[in-house]
Image (cartoon, rainbow, N blue to C red; front, side):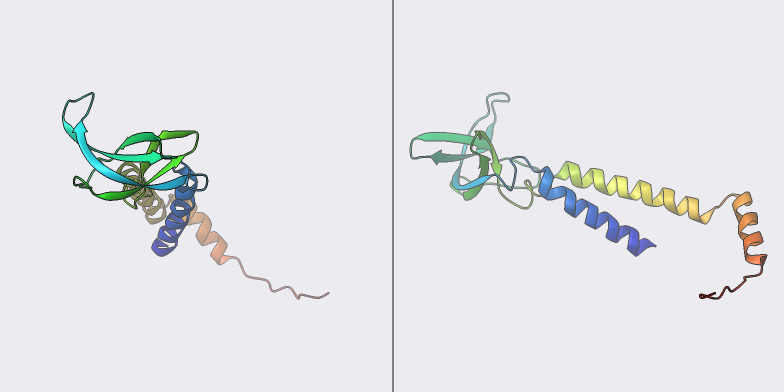
Length: 148
């Protein structure tokens, strides 16, 4: 049962990921970008931004800071964006685009809680259910012929 539940969870999570990314993976465009540090407008701290140019004239900048990912000045990265909203692009990487820490944490906690609930239901069945199961096992099994 453990292996089956784990397999189902991985399949469902794997099907969820490609269709839930923003910007959309299937419609998104990728372009190279360069990391530059500058003061964030809200916190006034130096934070990394990925700067990229479209059509040789319009420059865009997207935040590049993310939990457990370090960027250095001048790093070359790839940005994925949608044509309608290039200013909302994101760094295209496994950690931060495909797998986010919030989704991963939520899925692990959810999986653990649901798995423990399933185990508690199976390990401690109601007395009525056990009695019904014993009565079912006591009934003689009648073999019916396949063809009459």
